[in-house]
Image 1: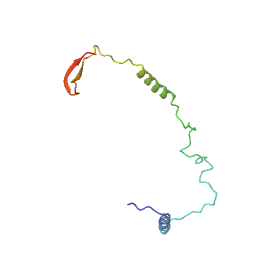
Image 2 (image 1 turned 90 degrees about the vertical axis):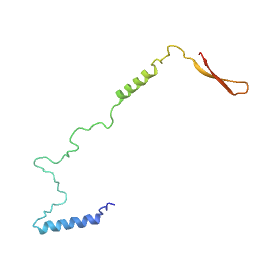
Image 3 (image 1 turned 180 degrees about the vertical axis):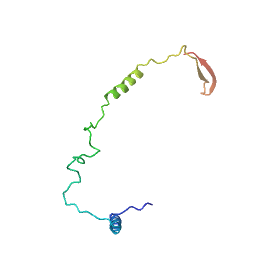
Image 4 (image 1 turned 45 degrees about the horizontal axis):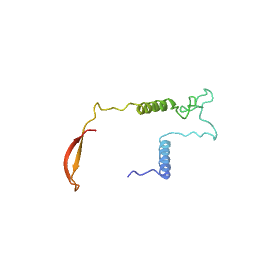
Length: 109
């Protein structure tokens, strides 16, 4: 079973990584609260990459698809049924007076 990282474990790992970075000669700059990470000179960074296009409609128009499906259903309803060229004879079981099967006979429809 995979052990999930709790917030406490993540905090300890981040603290350990930060101490290792500082021990290797790294430095940390403090940024004042409320300062944006966007570059105000170039104007870049204010718009995220995910939402840079025009807003698209949430629903797709399916009226053409529904019309096509309905036309197929209608075509199937009005399709002429196949008719046999000639009526075929059928086998019929003949019973005696006591209800016992006696023989098979061919009967024309």
